[in-house]
Image (cartoon, rainbow, N blue to C red; front, side, top):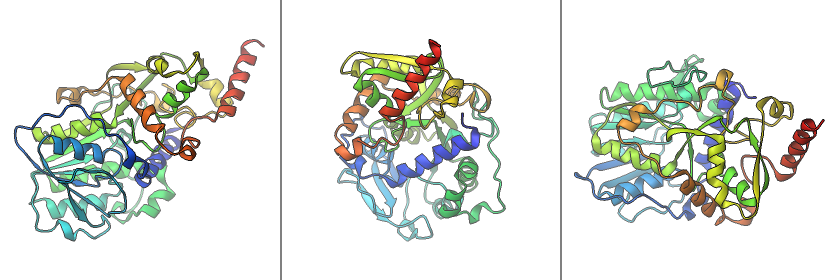
Length: 384
């Protein structure tokens, strides 16, 4: 089973993949909750806006009546409403298109490096009332404690100069830098927008458009039917958040001018691995049954949590609290969730619109032949 460093390496590498792969997301049928109109239209600047959650934020904000500008390099394709203003630039020292402009809210989606926040926030501190930074629960120093809330300690930075970190240095030490750099980025936002910063710490972000397949594997696998290898026990906890729920909530936070730090994962009530899979059972195109293999056996078989068995981490040791993070503060600020079955169904529908070669290369989970080998070994042990 992965230790904290290995887990963060896998998580951050998948995040980097999602930042790089967006052409597939352009073909999404973007399904949002009915928006209604906001009481007061805002001028919203979204740094990024063309990745996984960004287009959902943009569409929801426009539907709510807000004026939206997106700032990025213009290298990714995303189908955004015609009213959206596109500002070109680069977080690596090319912010010219942001100068001399005023917004009500800045939403920072893609930041990996603290100097990205420093440069943007220092430029915008007198030109926006609020800075909303999308972080991660991986900032926490200790993921072993269940019911961890926003007051828990964050991971310390292990290097000499965080502002000197580049994407190259980050890629060389993803597992050691992912959480600490996000934590420092949070602090940098608060430095330039004191009392005016909102930090959102999502858990695993899932749903239509996710190029990492960290959740997609399961509806795709269940749809295929047959005997499905499942990890741990049916009672093992999992936490996820649909990208659309996260995106819509960030816009509502901006409308409330809500500041502070919020863990953002879900659902509202505890979710177990077995219940998650059962919610997907209607997707099966034939008989399906779930066979749970315990964590020790999976480790012996070199089946890794999170990568080979996505969504799941064993609820013990260093990862005992990973899927038991407290979201009470976010719920009090209106975080809400669509039904899990809806997320699974629409994720599968989206995935099946992708080119055949993409569908044949799931980015996470076991290949069918490897799954069959592990199931055979499990049954052999049970009857040995």
